[in-house]
Length: 258
Image (cartoon, rainbow, N blue to C red; front, side):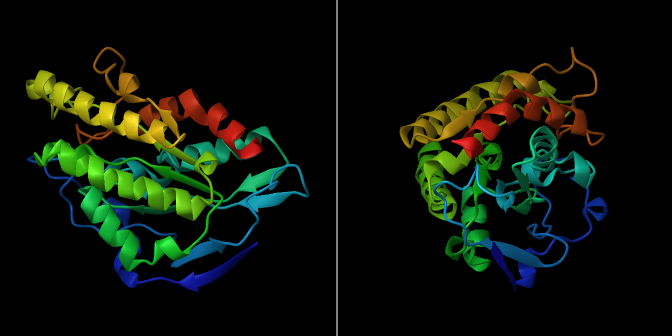
């Protein structure tokens, strides 16, 4: 159902373990964006209508984001886009969700993600499912909320184009890094800022009739719930990512079956 072709080497995944975030700032590493290790992006050519319920087929999945999507400081199998792929495949036999193609890098803002998508020519591709999680670095860098809203809207519209329908797109809310070792000293300020970003993200997303999955309360359970933060003291652990997936994977399954 898909053609394979090379993309620009500038967004090929380098060894994840070789790059660690600094102890001073979150989201600042300069690693390349992520695409599968075989250096290709599948190009799904399936008819978006009536895909499910026919002969067993495969579902292509594109995940767009920043350090949370690439899974900074966790093993590749613990990345949150990988975990629902495994869960969805285990729960039904009608189709198989392929290992996600990921375009994400630690430190990316909405503008960085937009530029990377252009460089990789992602907008000319077609996927059966697209996810988006972006905005923490806009907040951290003190960029205007209005700028985020404008750029996020553009990214959302492009995600719809790639997926062929808003029903095949979903958005994950921005986790609250105020509830980490790194952010706890400024927790109140960080949480207030991110609440504004998430409110805008939710409003814009739902105005396009796109699913918005709120995982922020899960991130705010630290330190009462053990094991939520990775060893770097900043990013979510694989366990926390699993809790995210537990909260929305059934809704994603419903999106694929509609």
